[in-house]
Image (cartoon, rainbow, N blue to C red; front, side, top):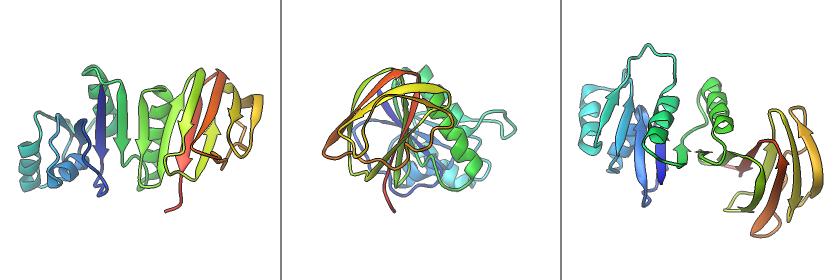
Length: 201
């Protein structure tokens, strides 16, 4: 099952045929765009009462969190999505603004490979485990690969190809590759890889 989690005040949400969860101000964005939500979750401490009333009109359920908490709104929304059986999760508005939150969301991608994909207007980021993947270009000009541990990968159909290459957390030359045609083939023989598909604004 697929769900989209909206974070922050993002203005480029396009309604698709899937479920939605609004996290804090992301819930307000969905409500203003008249997009129904399965769930709105957050502390809502910076949202006015009239806006909360607007959110309630479009949310099947609201979970109001204590503002003093250990976890971020994005993690709470992600945990609820997983608890409800979603196994394909898109997180919209995951970057921009505070760098600490952007880094935190990258860590979430590493923790949930093959499940969580992070988006903003110019970036699509996800983690993949061992396997063979046909990666679509999907309008992104660049693609980069990183790992936070050790990985062994091969690339076919990319501008820069490699075979059985052993990476570690210090490997940075895998920045700004590109898919030559419609798709490239990534083979992960070992480890977990962070994949960043990007384009200029």
